[in-house]
Length: 324
Image 1 (tube, rainbow, N blue to C red):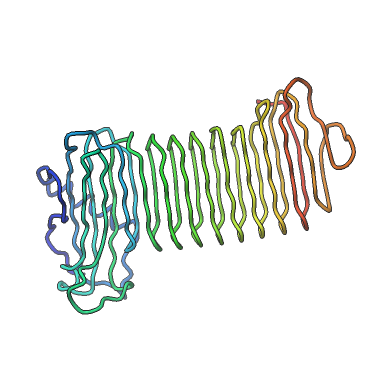
Image 2: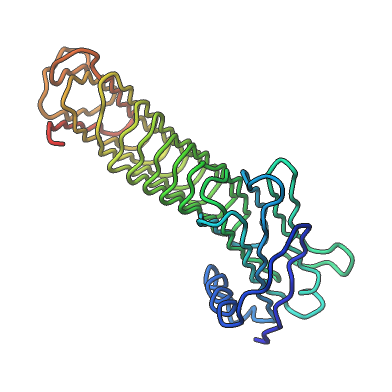
């Protein structure tokens, strides 16, 4: 593989001075490692770094659209943006046509887009690759989109909207509302403090330490695994897949967990009252008081949490513990 000298990303902004050569090489290597180049597709590549200072207003929102590779957005303490890119193409001529463009807005929002210059012979999508790492202020709202690549969001405080076709989504240590959509890419959320709304078609969803006012997750063909969850309103639904839910429940909470062809296994920790309604061919409920008609009561006190568990063809299992 032939390494080219780093060149500036196409941008309309105030750009700071270049990073030290050793730092740039280390950062470029980390960007390339998002998606290692297959030997059969080796060609020429180019690693770039651009620093973007805020204009008149602080950077409040960042939108990135990268259909040509992976995208990682990291929160940092600085007021500006750092854009790290790694481009790959079969030859120098094609590499020169790969673009990473930045469009700032006076209101404090910034848009970053990757593209191929249309002037030239057609280029197969599989022959080119652009991976991005964006370091943004912690408090900036994020809108990130990829096609087949990985989409990662870490250490941000204002939530995000994330969208992929077949790429995976990973969210870690994020506050604020998060809305995620994928067709065939698995999604994983860890240490998210705020509303989560995750939708997929043929993918698995993993939820680990999610706490907020609302948690909604659904997939058509895939399983949902949740642990250390605590939200006031919860809706987990899948058509073809199992659901596991392990978490805490608060007074007055509403939890719905439903699968058409899979099994549902829910384990809750709650110091107060819970009312559980079950709808399934096979129900296994440990403890509690059976009220008839698939309804069970646990604990005592005002404003019981309402839990509804459904499976048309599978098994519903439920257990509750007073342990914190």
